[in-house]
Length: 155
Figure (cartoon, rainbow, N blue to C red):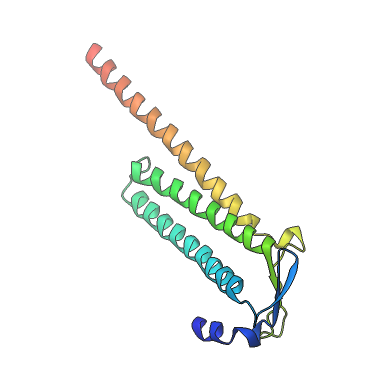
């Protein structure tokens, strides 16, 4: 389905604006293809972060709250979501076009600050900070275990 839509690109997107300059799609359609591939890449990154979240849930089911895998998955989720935000921000800032296939015209551009995928960045930064918090908690847990063992030896 996606490849069929890309084959008829000149009919769907007759022109586009790249860095403020208008181009006809029939003359040069490579930026549209690249932006479409990058846009699908951002969704792939989001799906990969959801798979990492599933791994965290599986670790939590086994009562491994502060394992290295949980910390790694939180960090991975954060970085994947931040990278997804960065790619979307670059796409939205560089190319604008109107899609004639849909009834509602779709313009990829920063016309309104609320159109930006800032929620993805917020979640990414949240998971990065959560990985750091779990890492600190793991260190504290290990230190408490060592202190408890030393106290048992002195008694």
